[in-house]
Length: 297
Image (cartoon, rainbow, N blue to C red; front, side):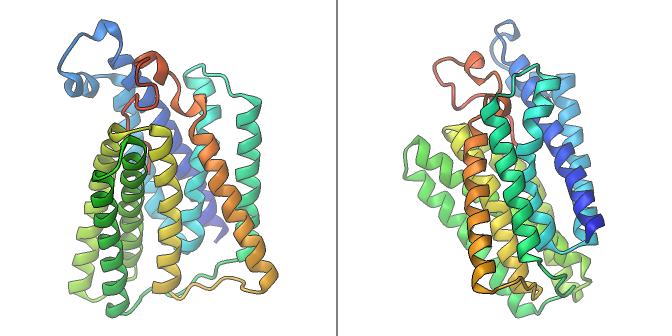
């Protein structure tokens, strides 16, 4: 289990570097000297953005290794450490100042996550699950994704960003849950379904993240997807693979407090200048929606 944690922390560090480079490349490609039109082609040709995109898939591969080594309920919550790694990496790569407020919330999220893992002590669980449980889990996740997208269409910018961000979080959770299930060598028909859904989640996650960021405030959409992803994946793992956690009243109280503090810390860090960098410079009239580079998942 320790090895799985270490590997996942490496993955989130690489995800974070990927985000910073994609952000830096996107801002550069949107500068005044870039001209009008051909935005996507221009972005694809930017070496910094390309380096970030390559690192995104490197991080994804390391993520799969972590899933193969440990429980999904232990590995996936560590995804929130992206917002712990991003500020110091941004300080080095993009020369962005990390405020004392940022460091405080990094400490809060780190300590709360550590409390969650130490107190909850999730078990390894089973490697496989029943077909019925898979049907229920996958159906709920796909329906939840669709509902979030439909509700988002009816809301204003902030509500739409929140719902589309939540939908992206569900799709990213679907990716890791399906990939973890495929590692368990289920029956052939189910195996191919899980592989197909994992591929859909891997490709769709990036696309829907970009869609979410274009729909409204990036501070809202990023917080929604980073909170929803590990939450949904952890609950799904407990149901599918019989993962158990410590459930005494005191343990549950401490776990609840830790989860709330992690979520609150994510919201605070998601609005950090070190996370979204030069957004206001890119577009002064729409500072919260730029740049439109996807966060790592």
